[in-house]
Figure 1 (tube, rainbow, N blue to C red):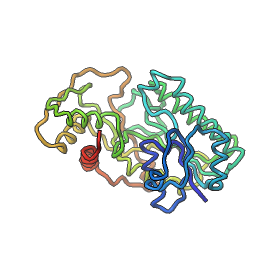
Figure 2: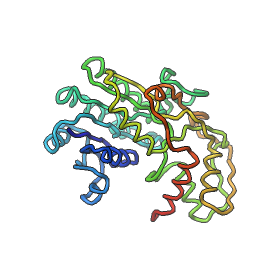
Figure 3: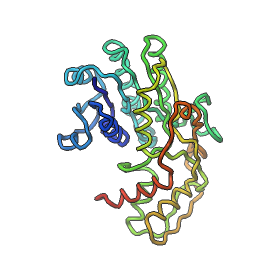
Length: 308
């Protein structure tokens, strides 16, 4: 049998396809963006449909590779800022696509295991310390609201139709291939030769930084875990790292003398702290292998090797 990845052409999706292929899986995918034959072979992707998460495309994957034993659902909005600029598009990418997938599963492969990638953005900006899965979900952006609606849809289909879904709320994922957010911006500016970097916020904001290579190991592991009808897990290490420390690690890895200071201007709705309670993951068991200091150094090395 095959496994499928929706949204497989994205940052996490491309890493996940590679991980699953290395584990011996036949991997099929559907999502936005063309992937040519050379790129498919490099990724370990058996076949790909460039298109929406809709019944004709899902039926097409069955015709090409048979019914899946597991589906990793990564398709959806990927930017808080874009969700604010284009909320309906974000809704369509996240909520409508998930509803379409769940309805197709209900009719076509109800026994298939579904691994759903959600976000810690569902928790909002009101939590201090480690956040457990039972904490109140108070999202601040359309992106976070849509991820939470997606989760509710999965819960509905689990309760009403027995769909087996594991929802993973990922925290601050970084790593090779990431071409946006703090690390990418830092490296761009360092590559331009800037020797004084002014960043927003105070620098004391904390995040739970997790390397994408660990994240995809986790996702693959969850597809092999028990078949509970519905499970919600934090995808985080529980280790807080200040933004100022991330900047220090990145500039150190880059080399040369660079000063970093913070403007003190905090974006509205930006959480001061977003760190997972990782107790449930520890009981699987799952362990994070890449310490943040190593991961940041490896990201800088990857960035330097790219043509920008």
